[in-house]
Length: 92
Image (cartoon, rainbow, N blue to C red; front, top):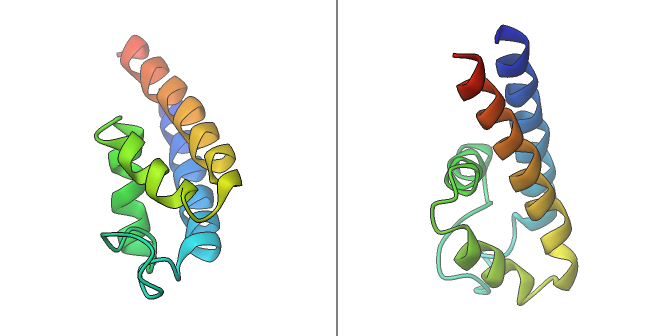
């Protein structure tokens, strides 16, 4: 269980860095309604919302309006993190 928690945390950090570097200027340019990815803490909060599947489609749609390829990292994150969370729940 500890190993799965560690791997999920590493995945979360790597995806936070990646999404911050890819999408950090969207709100500053006025392309999204909320500031999702400008700093690591906001990206972490957004990815936590996406990981728990809370309103993930609206975030993805807003980002995909600018970058059509944005579904690749976001949906990959959803699939990998959901698998990790399910495995942790099964282990408990």
